[in-house]
Structures are given as C-alpha cells and as structure tokens.
Length: 461
Ligand SMILES: [Ca+2]
Ligand SMILES: [Ca+2]
Image (cartoon, rainbow, N blue to C red; front, side):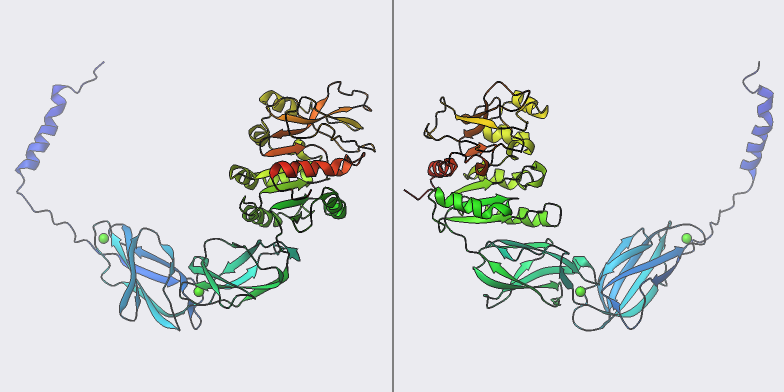
C-alpha cells in the first residue's frame, strides 16, 4: 500500500510553482472598501410630540463586508446631549427633556468591519415633551381605618417617559406645613411618629425634571401609643374585650400599655408587607420595653407570628422582651427561632418535626414546675376549667426554665409524662396555651402580672 505520493507525482507541481514564479510581478489592486449605509426609524407613534423616553430602531448595510457597530448621538438643537456606540439595532433612550416641547434629533452611523463609518448618517428629528408621573395606592394596600402611629403606604408609580425617571416621593400630613421630599427608591413609604387623631396624608411623585404628579390622599384615625408595653392581639380580634379585661384584672392601667390588633385575615398577601413594615418600625426597645404576643387562634397557619419572626428577632437582639401565649405558638414557629431563643434542643426539634409533642384533643392538667428557678410564685397555678378543643404543644428538651407542665387525661393514648408547656429563657417567655383558655381557677391574669413584673413593665401594686 502506497501511502505517500511517489517522487514522480511531485514533478508537475514543481513545474507549476516554477512557472508561477516566473510570471512578471503585478500589483494586486484590492477593491476600495465601500462604507456602510444606515437607516433609522422610530417605533413610537409620532403625533405632535413623543415622550422623553423613546424606542429607536435602525439597521445598516455594507455592500462589501459586514456592519459591526453603530455610533449614535442625540442632539437638542445643535447641542449634542448624548452619544455612544452599540452593537444592537434597537435601544430605549430617555432624554433630559425639561420644560416644554423641544426638538430632538437622533443620528446613527453604521461602522463596517474595515472601520469605515457611514459618511451620511441616518437622522430623524421630532419634538419631544416630558410628562408628569402618575401615582396611585397599590390595589387593596390601604391600612385599616384605625392604626397606631406607624403606617406603611404602597404605591403604583408610572411615568410615560420611563418609570426609572421618577426620582422623588413627596408626602404631607395635614399637621405639616410643607411637603417632605424623599428620594424615591422603593414603592412603599413607612410614616412614623404620626400625631394621634384623625389624620389625612397626601402623596405626590416627581420625575427627574421636577414634573409633579397629582396628589392622592388617605384619611384615617391614629391611636396614641401608651406606655412601654405593646400588647399584640394576633388573629384574635373577637377576644379584644376578654383580653382587655384580663389585662385590667392583672393590674395594668389602660394608659400603661398599647394594644395592637393584627388583622384577622392573612389571606390577602398585599397586607403582608404592610404589617411587616409597620411592626419592624414599631418594635424597637426604645419604644416598647416588652411585648405580650397573645392569640387564641387554634390554627397556626392563621396567625401572623410565624410571618413576623425576622422583625421579632431584630427586636430581641436589640434587647426587647417577649411573652407569647397562644395555642399556635409552638406548632408552626420556625424551629431555628425556637432553638435560638428558647434553647430548644435539636433532639426536641426532631420530635417536633415528627409531631411527637403533645398534639391531642382533651383536657390537660397543668402544674407549676416545682424545680423552676424563676421568680414565679409556686402558688400561681393554671386550670383549663373547661375542656380544650384545640391542639396543645409542648417542649421536651431544652435549656429553658420550665414554668408549667401539662398532662392530658382524656386522650386514649395520653402521654404519661408531664410535658413543659410554659417555658422561659432569658427575655422570652412562652406558653403554648392561650391564657384565656386556662383561667379556670381565675389565676391566669396573675401570669400577665408576673411576666410584666419580670420584664419591668408592670406598674401596678
Ligand atoms: Ca465595507
Ligand atoms: Ca416624566
């Protein structure tokens, strides 16, 4: 098998090469590069004027090569206001159109693969005008008729010249003498320290030229903040009177604490950011030394607590103190939160995840923990009085102090152990029962008294 050309087969090739080299030299004359040609059009409907934000389209042809880039420039009268180079054939431009109608010209030149620039730029001129932005409250985002002195508003803001040209949000309360101007960097605004009473607030938006939107307004009632204790009723508006009575029975003067009712409905996601913003602004130790977070809602997915753990953690880390009382407390609270703030053991977390804690219907018997090293009086007992028809959780292991233990007597597979249902670790006290449900012997209000005394917010006898 012959895999190499034989010596004889090279001969004609050599002759050919020699023959070429013998031909008289002739200068190769490359054809001159033809520059590209550019075309432009504006996609916006050009009526009398176009908005200050405009979409331009263009393209270029090069007869003897390729178009590799485009140089563009914007001119107002004879002044260049913007220029650049791009590889695209479409872009959106926002022109600094201030005041009235101004004539703008767009020039575009294709550049070919030889670096030649179209000597006859494509141009288009049209009158442009800036329009003021528009502002509206986000659908179904308005706060309730009555709030505390912190309220978050959410907005829909638009500008035909480009939403990114909106630069300022302005507001004015009826108690203000002038508009307050804030940099517009989000679609909500949290107002704090609002004076109590019937309030009206006005909002406007402004674009980068200072063009102002119409104003929108909202009127509502602001309740005063009282004392250094915040009592949050979570999904428990129906029991307002019962909780108020218990606070009074506990010895709290109604001027020494502030009620905050979290709305019963969790179903509207638009309300979430509002409540989260408001509670984040409200929950500072300098404003409230302690929080009683109370609920009788049996379904943990209904309560707000689980959705507000981040602001709660911030509050606790800043030195705040919290007492939780509710049947939903342990069922759905993030286990990392329970581990961090109540010392819940990881083994207990595993039990919890496997739903092996107390989670049965029936009537628990509740006892003070005799080994608890707390300031709670041993005589402070709790009793359900009537059978509970809600689930009750408990903790098995952790570094917490046990205030109360419970044992179920009615369930066929009742746990034999007395499981901790009231625990304390530092600045957090948690009772996995609603105090309203364990006042069978009339002692539940005293739990509020003792917890408040420990937190330094109880001012009664
Ligand atoms: Ca060319
Ligand atoms: Ca505008």
